[in-house]
Length: 433
Ligand code: DLL
Image (cartoon, rainbow, N blue to C red; front, side):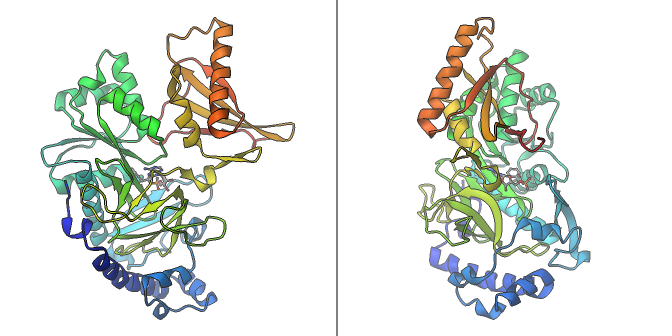
């Protein structure tokens, strides 16, 4: 289902005209209202008038998260404070959090892009949307909520946690659309089995899962365990929250709502803009935000862009599944690797369960990676030889697939902490030494 054909299936030349008109306004707005942009533009001898085509955007400086932190709490708004009606604040582990302020019109835009995202996954007013993303300062809960309300779907604002109760409600209310992180979706399946409910027999049809990287094999695992189609949704607090991009039923990349968010992919080292199809860091410019407008914001997320029209009829660009964050790339003895690539290999292995953590340690001056992985409950840990054999087999599979030697340690079922939101995949013990 296409929520807004006019914009999602727009002729690309017309779309580019619209983007340029909006872009000119945004560049002027940040230049006039945010001193740090004014300073950055001047340092690069740029004025908003220098932007005459979409290509000219390349000349403008990139924006980093650290610059946004400096504006805490109200310094980044591009609309007067009295027009702001909602705040979302990203947690961030280092430094001050980043604040996003929304005007009433921003909330309308957010509802619109989220309605498009939900419709992209086939959601209609007949659906019961079981929204297990966290409500609060995190954008997941309210973002889905606004979109589901606009569609007129029946929304269950359950938020994360109390998993048994969630399952009871899913049974009683016949929830059809599950919205939560992929790791929480798996946990729901696991708890359902534990309490004797077959998760495949629930009324769920589709999952709209995101907020963390997840591999293709994780998708298959979730689809089999819950008996649903598992679709990817992408977004970030700084730009709007969820609803920047959404996968359709073709499962070949996430459609980015380009009339609101202008994407570029850059080489994270040099900042150079890459060609269609080349892998790099996603950079986004908001085209319609009033409260917090951003020009060329470095998301830190690694992906590729594809401008080819999709079988679903949408003409807007697609971004590939996010491989990981630039900061989460591990460099182990010269091999660059993202956790999602290891996940993809692990989940092909019969004995492996989809619950793992990557432990990074420094031993004798060298970085070492150990994969801690749960195995199916019927693996007997008293058979040391057998456990060692499985560990060696998995180590070999990872080495063959990724050219990386890691240690594998099997752990018993339910040893690795379950997450209601974003899973913690990397435990970095190097910094504490
Ligand atoms: O995670 C917004 C969101 C909520 C997206 C619900 C999807 C669903 P933040 O907490 O600000 O916002 O985190 C944003 O999460 O830069 C990515 O690194 C990561 N991320 C978000 N969606 C995906 C995804 C929300 N589909 C950061 N795949 C982003 C991989 C994702 N990573």
